[in-house]
Image 1: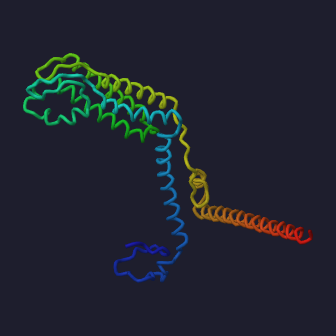
Image 2 (image 1 turned 120 degrees about the vertical axis):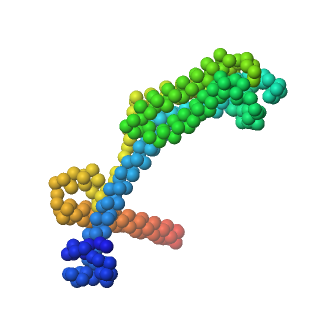
Image 3 (image 1 turned 90 degrees about the horizontal axis):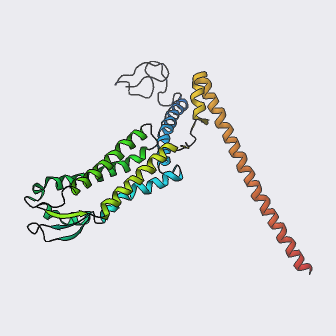
Length: 291
């Protein structure tokens, strides 16, 4: 159970009535406004910390022109794999296929790849395929981690992920170049794998350029009881809770008065405009009748 908000005595399960059995205070409404203000302060501070994360997330994607370019360069490399990555002639024992092999071809040929002996007949070719698949996983992880591109460890993450990406693609290309004619197929690298590698290098260059340039994260101004939150944290160090609460009431009252004054000005302007329109209308009518 909770404590009595007035006398602070711990309440038992049997103390279920509205009034405290020790001091008689109404537990529900006693000092209700202050308790609501305390809860509001906590909620606004929590909102401030959450808003900072949202601001960093937005800045990671649209915080600068170069960051927007990074979204494009980070997104398009994997589409190069839709082009032929190799040109190959399959062993007729597995499939009577000859031509370009893209990831669409690989997807459509899953049944062929799953045949007994296909993957074990050429371990290097299998390793090449796995490295390409692994590069797609690294690409996806990198794209997701762009959401934290304004974090403290953004540079370290970028170095590791770009290194893994490029090594996996270079490794796949090197293994296939060393193993062109096998029991499974005969072929050579095609435009897709080279374009994929070039786009990954461009993406890495743009990513490091953004990180080196830095992004100015613009945080949305947050308030606690009408006080800018940065000032609120400073006032907490120098003022008592009671004085701070009075300062919050004063700030909120001032904002309320400013808002009311603004509404009154707008209303007065509308009335003045309506009167002016009526006067012009009467003058026109008078001119017509007089004519």
